[in-house]
Length: 142
Image 1 (cartoon, one colour):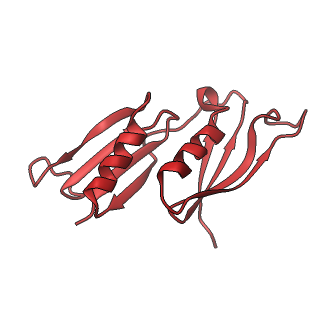
Image 2: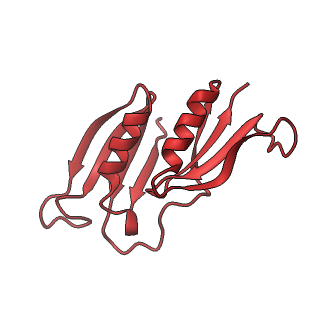
C-alpha cells in the first residue's frame, strides 16, 4: 500500500501547478519533477496547458498534482498542511521565508517560544500559506 499527498489546483490556482512544483523542487534538497502529463485537446477536465497528472519529489517524498478548470466548490484549506520538521534553525527560517513571501501569508509567525506561548510542538513553530494557497507548518526539532 502507498499513501501519497495529492494536490489539486482549482479555481484561482488552476494553471499554476507547474509553476508551483518548479518552485517547490527548487527550494527543497533531493527534489525533482518525475513526470507531467497534460490534458489532450478536447479532453474532459482541462485544456492542453493544464496538468492532468504529475508526480514530483520533495526531499525524497513523492507528491502527486493535478489541476482542473471545472468550477469546483473547494480549493486548498489550511486545515490540511505540509509539516516541515528540521533540527536546523537556518533551514526552517529559510524555507519559511521563501514559502511565505511573494503573496504568501503568515498565519503563525515563526518564533522562538521557549516555553511561553509554546504550542506544544517545540521551541520554534510557524505556519504559513504560500502564494499558491498550500499551507505549510514548521517545527524546529530538538
